[in-house]
Length: 294
Image (cartoon, rainbow, N blue to C red):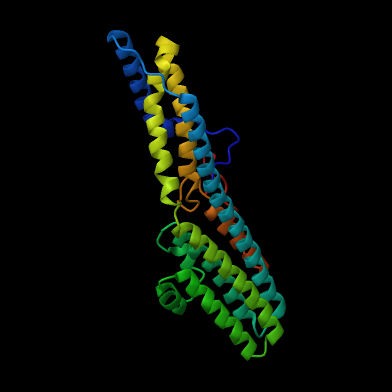
């Protein structure tokens, strides 16, 4: 996620220079052709086309942002639920009998959120997950099709072990299970966003219409703008292409790009809070790198 108040000019240029160059070349070609060849440019209803296209692109961008913001809301709920399960584990289970089980549940939650982050970003599960698990867990929970869900299931089994050992009563177990349900619901919402793209009408039609509009733009403006057509048409077309690109950038909030949710930073926040809750040393928070928080 870009956190700089003013985005880097280099980053902006790297994203727009290709379409901007193609657009400018086309605008120059139309202008030169208009003055070299004896033809009259057709009068195109660009105002009507542009208004309709702007409305279409606005709907698309709003839909993409809603997905991005819902993903951030779900991760906020995940942070709160992780703190809740750690607090309940620490306060409900007695010391020193359940000390090891408490530490295992808390560390398992840290492994869970990191495993979920890797799944959403389509990354392999690495040491930031396995270092919080026992050897038995590495061979069982992580071997499942959905490793994060496997870790969550095994956390529920350990809570049941605490009840069977007399360290939790049924009311306390129910309260902790309710937190696990909240965690599972948040994970399900994230997976829905990741696995369900925008409808095809929202993905392809705006792209096609925007490119057609950019092609027609200099043809309809050349009589009015004359030699200024390349500049005016390129700037106008760039604004539509920019809105189109905004939707592309926000539609997948777990794509591991500079525009997605800062999952690594949020997982580190959970790790810090949970390790400190059991008295273990915690790492430093993730800081932005070149204006981007990962």
